[in-house]
Image (tube, rainbow, N blue to C red; front, top):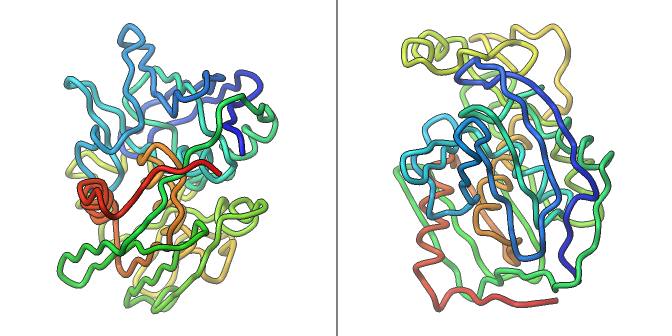
Amino acid sequence: MKQTTISKTIEISGIGLHTGVEVNLALKPAPENTGYIFVRTDLDDFEIPASVEYISHCSYATTLMRKGVVLSTCEHLLSALRGYGVDNCFIYLDSIEIPILDGSSEVFLELIERAGIREQNAPRHFLKVLEKVEFEQGDRRMSIEPSDKYEIECVIDFPHPLINHQTYNFEMKNGSFGREIASARTFGFTTEIEMLRKANLALGGSLDNAIVLTPEGMLNEKPLRFENEFVRHKILDIIGDFALLGMPFLGKLKAKKSGHSVHASLMSKLLKTESAWEIVEI
């Protein structure tokens, strides 16, 4: 199996979910063994590799930082790249935050499909899990264990009539990301909005880019894209965050009430447990 990159440059504009600032984004082909690299065109093309070592904080989105330069809300784009099987890509943007678009990975995926992907000469590398690694934080739990597949089992629990208890099992294969995960949108609660705004977050949030939940239902007039759209979006976030490993994994991830900070903690623990993984070519 060979590495891939996109066949041509693709561009899109949008607003940042948390900053509310307009941002221009371009995805460009990259040489083999590059991985994903963010390039801040507003800061003399400063580069921030999409890597676990640059995770800065993970409150309501995953934020990377290198030498004081920040890149925020990268998980939906990284999820689309990993989900479509793109290994190498330069991501040019002229602001601090990736555009939120419709709150899912669907538009990014459509752009990548339109560009097409090109096979490269180098073999694709996988991080193969050899032994189980777990992380717990209160009632939040996440683990990864050996498997010959890329699998995620996710459980969420919210005391809300549209969510309650949702479970989803996902395997990355044969376009399953596009069919099952890519269009699931991010969600939030009206009870959180005032707090977020006071913290200068969610300034670009709207019914066009998020499911907004009231205590009894939701503000959005358009229906849910899936009955269990919420747990599917959690898997979308997991795929995007775990793209920061720098290669697809072979293992089974199990997540219960997880979030960006739990994802980051498990990745860090996994990488530090050197006996728990090896890099393989298939």
